[in-house]
Image (tube, rainbow, N blue to C red):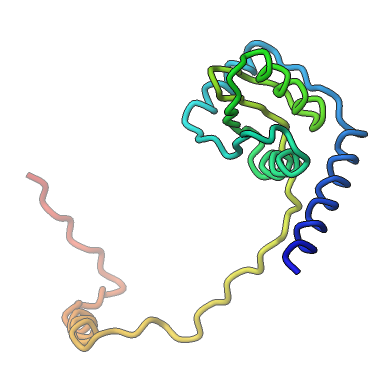
Length: 164
């Protein structure tokens, strides 16, 4: 039962990758934009790891999901050779239509513009039917304050206060 679920996930991942590969083209970044993205990626943690089995369809599908959710991601690669990591970076970017931002050590940083989220309008909050409840002290103070206030007489102007 569990293998059937894994098989369907892999099939879904492969079809998603096929459609992404057909529509993807490598994205080019300007030096200024690349610098901004490097600065933004500084505080990120790696969200995907590529280890012994290399770049499988499941790993590509996970990278695709992360790019849709975040746009800018870090990938940790447990490959010894730098040339192999360069090849992985190029392969990921070509397959998913992403732009390589940085390759430093065993970390790869890639970026792809996030798709616009569909705006879901939120219903306005309902007004409260009853005013907030007052404690006994607050209610007494309110009525006491109103009783102490002297009403302003209509025809007479108020006496100005002295400023020192």
